[in-house]
Image 1 (tube, rainbow, N blue to C red):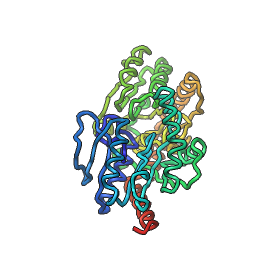
Image 2: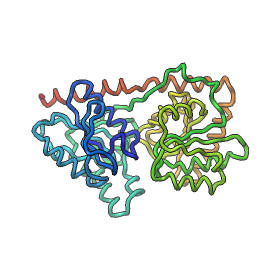
Image 3: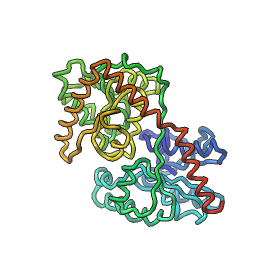
Image 4: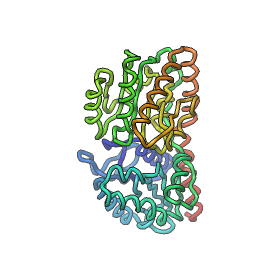
Amino acid sequence: MNWRDLSHSLAGGSERYAWEYARALAEAGARVEFVTARERGQARHEVRDGIRIQRGGGPFTFYVHAGLALLRRRRSLSVVIDPECGIPAFSPLFVRRDTVVVMPVHHVHQEQFATYFPAPLAAVGQWLERVAMRRVYRTRRTLAVSESTRTEMVRQLGWRGEVDLLANGAEVPDPTLVSAEDKDPDRLVVLGRLVPHKRVDLVLRVVRELATERPGLHLDVCGKGPDLDRLVLLAGELGIADRVHFHGFVPEETKHAVLRRAALHVCASDIEGWGQVVIEAAGWGVPTVARDVPGLRDSIRDGDTGWLVPDDPDPDLVAGRLADRVREALKVLEAPEERAVVVGACQEWAARFSWTRMHREALAVVEQELRRVGR
């Protein structure tokens, strides 16, 4: 159960994680259905990678669709993978007690509810995540994608049950495709969905801050989302429109070409469950400058595969700190010898994460739970 699938216009790292979990089960011989919401233009039914996709409902009515789908399959279901993407499907309420339910948690959404919804609706979402979710899933297997997420579940949600780690995977290129000599020390990149909490606006302010001292500075923004128009307008207001290329959604070949040339990835996100884009950039030898927030502090080895800046509620202060760190990082990356060391460290770090490893560990979780319930 996941409220978006990979073909949704707002699909991101959590959707990839859910799909890879489904692939792991299908490749191991299970019959898998992927129950998700339906965006305009998407087919109600589709088969992809041997997985049957069942779409229905929108951002809110998906949960009705999901509950009905579970009830229809109640007698035959063995396993439900029910990720928490803000609010899970509360699948334990609809399945038999001996049906295995696994809930992966990407990150805690308490602050995001307040950011995206009016106060009454935000309060409902916060209660569902903080109170209802803890009660409904208290006897079910719970996973976190990072140590930060596990810590925040205890701190913000009061989670008392055991939480195991199951980290994301990544697609890492052949090291021979990456060369430190191809890197342009004036080339920055941003990867990911363009939504408010990713704070790409702070990266644009960094570019403006450094534009005078680095005349050749350029930023590639690879990704799409509802924040795109606002960011394009902001780049114009800041006088850096000629320095920023908004690529929108790009095919893998284009993204790889951008990463092959980029020297530095900048991630100003408020919070992440992990840093999927950080590892993807690292695979291409690109270190990341990011805020020291949950998820990003797990995916970056500070001073080795990137640099973390202290966070603060004041966005002006954060933007200044990011600009200072980017300035220092680019100076380091100008030296060929230093750049080669950083590129190698990034590739070595990214190689530790693979979808093959994630598939193996994901299957182990399901097998353990099936044995536990005697199925």
